[in-house]
Amino acid sequence: MKNINVVWFKRDLRLTDHQPLNFALKNGAPTILLYLFEPELLNDGHYDERHWRFVWQSLNDMNQQLKGCNTKVLILFSPAVKAFRKLDTKFGIENVFSYQEIGLEVSFARDRALTQWFKDANINWYESPYGAVVRGARDRIDWDTHWKSVMRAPIESTDFKSTSFVPLELLDFDEEKHTPESWTTKQKGMQTGGTTLAWQTLESFFQERGRHYYYQISKPLESRSACTRLSPYLAWGNISLREVYQALLAHWNVKGFRRS
Image (cartoon, rainbow, N blue to C red):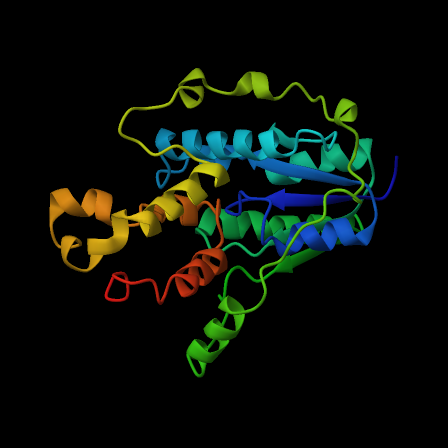
């Protein structure tokens, strides 16, 4: 099999409102969905086991949603260049689709190395802007107009029925055996990752929890439930900022919620 697409997930662990995923599927070539647990990030002091547990849970949730599509998110424990070289050797990569990453120096250095490797390997890398971020912007002129135009644009729907994925049986790299057992066990008091729970958390806010947000936000005990609790889900992209913003607009005139 030659000339495949790869959708590389990073901090966008969802299957909805996902431009790189839609670009890949509309391209028509067989597609691999990929997540990399990169040693450089696993060992970086900015991250903790609780982050990787959340990511692992998010990937499992995505794979539950993909049942019936004869595919899964392929998980590799590998530096990025090494992982893409392995996939290119086995399948022949034509295009890589991902979101731009606004991260740390370690991820920026990885992106610079990948850019050169993709160029040498004659692989196209298409990066979509993340949210309404303009990477490398030199000023803030009209930033709010741009933000609103992005956030009010239609939610991108994904059609999985007419798509072509690299078959599941070809994605057996036996990498999941490297998963630390501590990632696979839920921790009491910590939120569990995944799009399913992200939406349940958002919906519970609008059902009742958020009604008194406007004054409970300043109270440590009450704020724990009165806040949206969406921070980790937004940080890892289980739900897009645009989806949250448009859900807010849809509830704007609900009686008793306007002040919050």
